[in-house]
Amino acid sequence: MDIFLAILPALFWGSIVLFNVKLGGGPYSQVLGTTLGALIFSIAIYIFVKPVLTPLVIGVGIVSGLFWALGQANQLKSIDLMGVSKTMPISTGLQLVSTTLFGVIVFHEWSTTISVVLGILALFSIIVGIILTTLQNPEEKEKEQVNNFKKGIMILLVSTFGYLVYVVIIRLFNVSGWSALLPQAIGMVLGGILLTFKHKPFNKYAIRNIIPGLIWAAGNMFLFISQPRVGVATSFSLSQMGIVISTLGGIFILGEKKTKRQFIAIIIGIVFIVAAGIMLGIAKG
Image 1 (tube, rainbow, N blue to C red):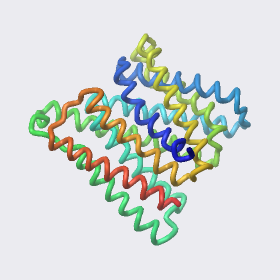
Image 2: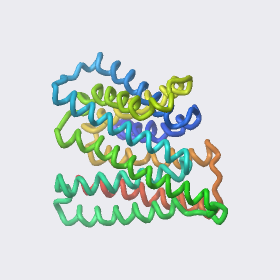
Image 3: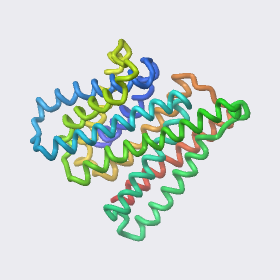
Image 4: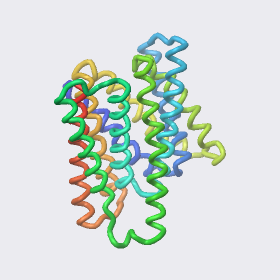
């Protein structure tokens, strides 16, 4: 039962972008709707859990949520250019690399020889996984496709920075996840409005995309529930499994076309990235 709870965040988070794309509306309406859904869920959780909210918790949570919105908005922009099955493995890999390097440099997480070895192997696995999942076929080498890929990668770098700050600022100030949940959601909505208001995102698609926001917040809640039951390292490792759902969902549910060679490379690349997540979880201990 505990492992099942720990897998739920991956199931929820891995399906979010599939819902975003299926529900439509473009990246601006999608990110606004997602943040509104997260706020609704977080208000409900706050009513039942009633965590202590200090000025520090509120401030840190809002900043974390603002940067989450930056990460999510740019990830959705990249999906618009490259598709889910190409964007998500790269995005996951970049997030793993950035949070790992930050943890090593700032928090000195690799304190043993085994953790150093596992960490280095994990980073190598991520690089191999990203290369495999971005394999192009000859038809994609047209100028427009190449330009879209380059733009998508640059946008993902901004997305990765947003997700990095979203994660590490909570840890830097040692804020409890339950306490941060509502302030984070408020920051997410503020960030969503600031990033999208020029593009008139307040439409029926924003309302539809409240559903992915509810799903994201549910995943967040189950992460908090599972961490004391299975440990932070295990919950972190299992949360990376969402890449399997999002990547394969992009191909089989959204109908993103891949050659047989690309499909095999994507499967192998996913295995490398998931293995890296597991190794990093063990290295963090």
